[in-house]
Length: 204
Image (spheres, rainbow, N blue to C red):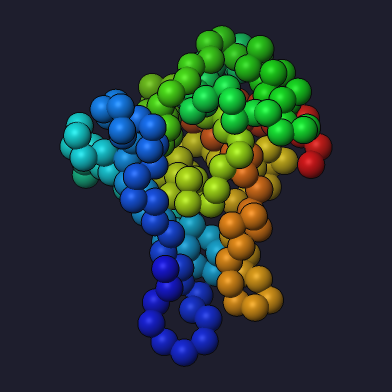
């Protein structure tokens, strides 16, 4: 969704009305509405809204992340990745060639791997309850809102190659769904993020 006006706008709204469709249709309250605002392809505002639990995470670039208007912080993970609690939506998202090996390495390195939390896992990470979220086969609307939320809580979020998440405009002034890597790594502790990148050793 773009703002009004002539020519390409530097601002872009990215909306996911129901992230976690399977959770939604089966009554599990870990789905949510995701709202991201990008400026020149960089996420500068992110919202996770869970209407059943009445929780709303808000991240704004350069400001502390809030949960229901109260500042929150991700947690440190003493002992590194071996003590990390890791979330992914489903193990089935790691079937693509070149993805399963890195996933198996990082899953084996973590203390515990958990599944089935959709966007709520990123909220838990920002609030200091879990340490890693590792996902693949994602679309931009699945994770762009998470960037300012995780960063504003003190964490780190990149693709599996360690690159900053930035959705570049095409020469035609459009945004291609396949124009952004679908592998995402988020960590509450930047040191654990760096360690997880080394374990993934992802080659695109």
